[in-house]
Image (cartoon, rainbow, N blue to C red; front, side, top):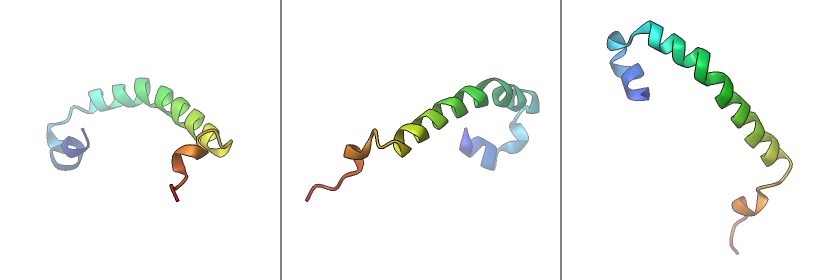
Length: 52
């Protein structure tokens, strides 16, 4: 979708974009905040440790 928005924006229906933002952005933000909280709490530190 990024390519479409960036390069073919005249083909986009503003109502569809508005609908996507209204209905999909909030649940996505909830998940992203949960991931950020988990990362800040160190729950995934092992994933980012370098093998030495």
